[in-house]
Image (cartoon, rainbow, N blue to C red):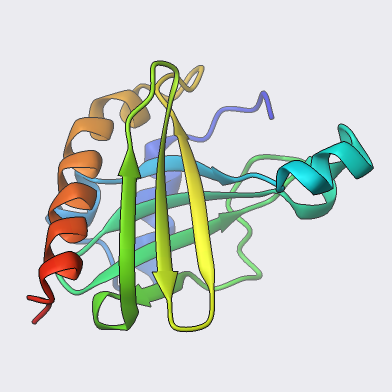
Length: 151
């Protein structure tokens, strides 16, 4: 994407929806939903434009918050409200740590969402600073969902 998203822009947007909490602030990361392998083979580089999506996401005590980003500008898409995934609706969470990228898969009764979180996002120091807290929170959520101890 190449354009830098400042954390102040994210905080301002979340504050407009009365969502800015300390818990959410420390887990905000830049995440992307990648097209499937089949879509990538079929559409090539265009698959990302067709089926890819970009978000700033974070974790709260009772839900996952996704703030949609514009695919072309990399800035917050103010036309679309934040998306919420309540923890109680999750049937599975899978966290994978990789060398260059982490991934988290959230599975509900009817849908599955896999987000990729790069360990480096150029010009977004806040992303790198928040990855440990986000991954710790995602792994704690994975354990809660697995043991069915969601409040």
